[in-house]
Length: 278
Image 1 (cartoon, rainbow, N blue to C red):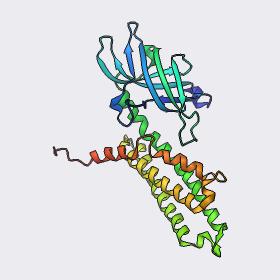
Image 2: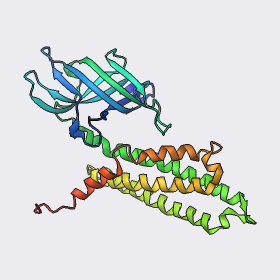
Image 3: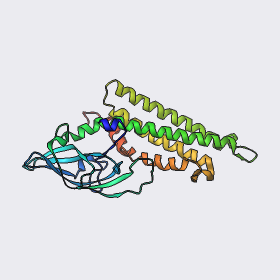
């Protein structure tokens, strides 16, 4: 951890798999970790959309774990250095976003050998540990993209105040000014959702419900904000003359990463079902 805290190294989290493996449904996990006679494990499988894999010093691998008799013990997390020859980078995916260091990779594990000390926590508790990580991780994305949306909005406001059309500044046209006003409304709601989820975590809650609410609310409000900002810029918005086009590509992907809006809605809807309803 010390090299990470010093900014000398970074990690990646290998959980998502290419079809038909685990994506939105983690129970479809196909990567396996089979116990060896010496107490270690052999890991085989594929992962993709692994953010930051290129240049990462080590990875945390989620794998379905089997004991020596072949019994399924559930998902576990394993730590491995990335410079092991049995971790193969198939390719770096060509994604629409461009803001993540190391991109998003497709990895393959070919008989990767790890010791028993590579298990993070207890065997079979990987999904439980992942949930502890996901709530605060979602908030960091919400905060990051809210900052990007604010930048796009500020660029659009500056442009609307200086660009003239039909004899007056764009900001004096209701079609432009109302879009920018809607940006303020969406950003305010997103900010409050982040604060509420952070408050829940500070009070000791697991934050799963609050972070799901925030993730959906923020990703969709942020997308609307950047989309309107690009629209207000007109032709300039679709060029690289400002950062808005790049921000647009980045924030669109946010509605997919860390759980799609649809999966979060499904999870939230389950909490509404009465326990005695069959």
